[in-house]
Image (cartoon, rainbow, N blue to C red; front, side):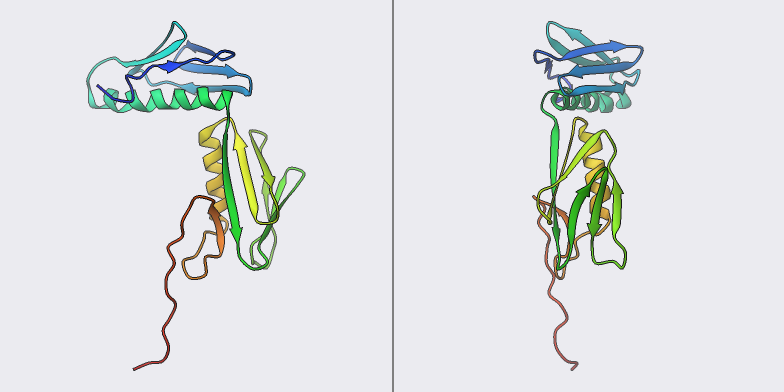
Amino acid sequence: MSRIGKLPIAIPSGVKVTVADGMVNVEGPKGTLSQPCRPEVIVDVKDGQVLVSRKDDSKPSRSYHGLYRQLINNMVVGVTHGYTKNLVVNGVGYRAEVKGNLLVLNLGYSTIIEYVITPDVKITSDGPNKISVSGISKQRVGQVCAEIRSLRAPEPYNGKGIKYDTEVIRRKVGKSGGKK
């Protein structure tokens, strides 16, 4: 039995979870999320809890059991509290600012990069070197952060680029002096 899959998910007040036709829908104060479910997994809503079980003990069923329990838990947390990730821009002259629905980034390239902000996430710039990405979907917030980070990934010699605020960049020593 999956250690994660067997744990029930408590439904907080103000959150409504429905299961119909292989879709799990979660409605809460911050919004609505839905997730299609595989036929190997059974999702039941009973007594203010969501219970995830599997149809049989085959390898795919065991794999999906813990996965779908965690996906549904992430949806419940997202519609109640939401998710936030922070990025830090390091480098001389590197800066980020939000203009309307665009994130304008100056990352040392010859052109300025404009990242279009979609309506499902909220991006704010806390000063010229900090970017905050928030939303109700953990997957979407992580994907947007990864896309922004990939525009100028941090390099190991000077540490310039965009990194997560909790990320530690392993620094390398540059070239040593003359030839022998």
